[in-house]
Amino acid sequence: ADEPLVLGIETSCDETGVGVVRGHTLLADAVASSVDDHARFGGVVPEIASRAHLEAMVPTIERALAHAGVAATDLDAIAVTAGPGLAGALLVGVSAAKAYAYALGKPLYGVNHLASHICVDQLEHGPLPEPTMALLVSGGHSSLLLAPDITSDIRPLGATIDDAAGEAFDKVARVLGLGFPGGPAIDRLAREGDAGAIRFPRGLTGPRDAPYDFSFSGLKTAVARWVETRRNAGDDVPVADVAASFQEAVTDVLTRKAIRACRDEGVDHLMIGGGVAANSRLRAMAEERCAAAGLTLRVPRPGLCTDNGAMVAALGAEMVTRGRAPSALDLPADSSLPV
Ligand code: KG4
Ligand code: ZN
Image 1: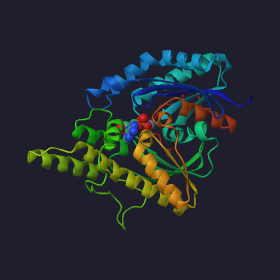
Image 2: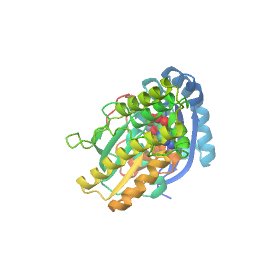
Image 3: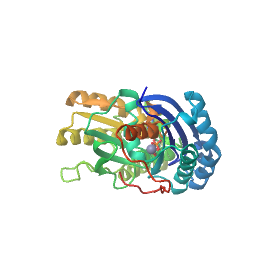
Image 4: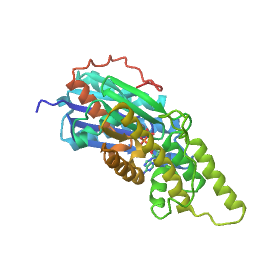
C-alpha cells in the first residue's frame, strides 16, 4: 500500500500513548497510564506524570511496533503531540520523537492534541467530511471547533469559560466520594439513578449568553451545595440520582450547543471527541438529538476518545498524505499551543 505508515506519540497528560497507523488503518495502539499513581492525590500530578512517561516511553514504543508487526525502519514518519498539555509531560514525548526521527532519518510531525482528538475518528469511520464540526470534551478542554481542514485550519467557535466538562465530572465524583478519574465512575453509577430527580442548572444557556461557550463551575458548585445540605440535615444522599442528574445537565448543554453550532454554520454532521465522549449518556443523547435534527453523528469508540497514540499517528498520516511540511528537529513542546 502507498498509504503512509506512521508512528504517533502522545504524552500531554497522564497516558503514555504510542500508536501505529497506515493511512486510516489502525495497526497498534499501546497505552501505559500513570492514572493509578495520581489517584491518591485526586488529580494528575505533573511531576509524577513526567517521570512515568520517561519510564514507559521506550517500552511502549517497542510494544506498539511489535504489535503492529512493523520495523521502525519501515516507518514513513514520526508524529508527536507538541501541545497543548503539561509542559514536562509533553517534553518527554517530543524528545523521544525527535530522537527516533533523527536516528531513523524519518520526517517529524509535531501535531496539536485537540486536532488529533478529532482526526482519530478517521480510524473508525473513514475520511472526515470537511468542514467538520467537532465537540471536544476532555479533562482539559470543552470546545466547539469548526475544521475546514483538519491539518491546517481549525476555528474555535467557543470554549469553557471556567471548568472543562471532564474536570466537572472529576470534581463532582470527588464530592460524591467516587475516586479519580470521576467520569467513568459517574457514568457507571448514573445508570442506576434517575436523571430527572434533581434539576441542576444549565450554565450559559440564556438568550443573551454566548451561544457556543460553556460554563460548568456553577453546576459543580450547585451539586456540592445540594449534597452538603442533605448531609447537614442528616439525610442520606441518593448518589446515583445525583450522578445521573448532574450527568444529564452536562450532556444536555453539550449536545444542545453542538447541534446549534452545526445548524448555524450549515454543517450536516457532528464529531464528538475527547475523554468525555466516552460517556454513555452523552453518546445516547447526541445520537437521539442528531437524528432528530437530521445530522450525522460520528463518535469514535470509547478507547479512542480518551488520550492515545493512535490519534496522533492518524493526524500525522493525514499530514503526510496532504504533503504538509514536516517540523524542524528543534520543534518545541508548547503547553498552550493554540489550534
Ligand atoms: O481526553 P482525556 O483522556 O484527557 C485529556 O486530554 O483531558 O480526558 C480525560 C477526562 C477525565 O476528566 C475523565 O473523567 C473524563 O475524560 N472521562 C469521562 C468518561 N471517561 C473519561 N467523563 C465522563 N464519562 C466517561 N465515561
Ligand atoms: Zn485529550
